[in-house]
Length: 442
Image (cartoon, rainbow, N blue to C red; front, side):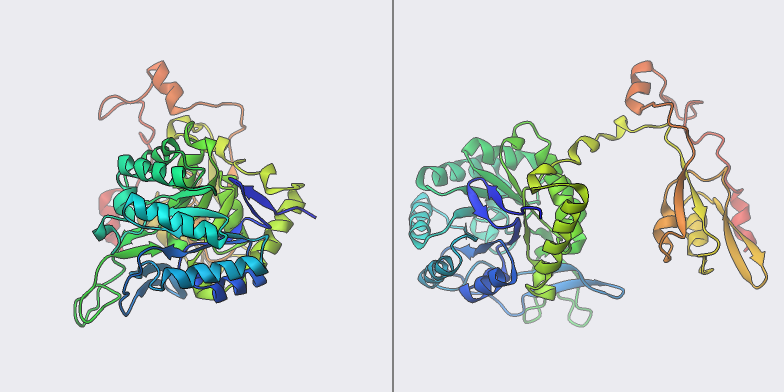
């Protein structure tokens, strides 16, 4: 059976499935319940000088039948006294000595950092996560993303922590920045043992159409919150990859965060260079029990692929992520429709006709109009396959023989790229499109 245990920058855990610092790690009761369910580690809800929270605190984006496709919160760090949190951390470690308990921290002065680190180490934490990502409330006070957006300040504070801490330190980054590598490199230069990302995205998820206040509304007013959940996963994956592929950043392990809900999500983060993952929104939606599916799926994936540990495949997808200029321009696929599976919804026709390349036509078959691919028009964009509601009804079929490989980068070196507005070298030159007035016939 595959071994899921990890050693993340010196922090040991029975598996790479951790809870992120958030409401699900607000107290010892929740963390013990999570460990009992199967989670391998937990990053305690951020400790600091206790705050006063507001009501309400959460908002979400529902997409059709999917609840909480995107999730927004305006909740701040712990509002519980530090002593209560430390006492419960000690209690958790007594019952689960082999599970990872990491203290998320956010304070202002060097003296406060030194004191809270000492207090947490005395409580028995296995490591620290520095919260430089919170995009609301705390950043207004010069903490959270206000630090994450200033690499020089971030490096300085990481340096303070590294001088004081004897346990491993993880620096958590804010995604609210143009180049995630800059704060990541600053953390490494400050001496951090590891990086975690992403924290939440600055956002407004909607407006109340009765009182015109941002959601969630607090007595008729609102503010930007932190956006997370399944909707942010693609952006988070990209940022994890950017750090994992950076020559300076790949010296430290990465904990991936953002939209993780299934075992497939976990595997994707690991393939792009993360060596642990952290989950929040999915637990808030479905409860701690989702870890069972994650663990079972991860084990099955590893068994099917012949992997003994997660380190056998961490970063395995990184060589396949290249710049656009390095993609093969001679690779050719076109759509193919399985007529036996087609339900006649015509979504593929509408999508291609109105949103792509007019490469699908409808032919009468009795009372049903059956879509067919116009092969000479198909550019292999995938849109029809993506909108089709029937699995494997539309597939993309390879048409080139694989013998020729040519990239934009190679064309540029050869001087064979379009350089004028009507250049003969343009890729779409001569591609058939209907006459503009043909649009008016319907």
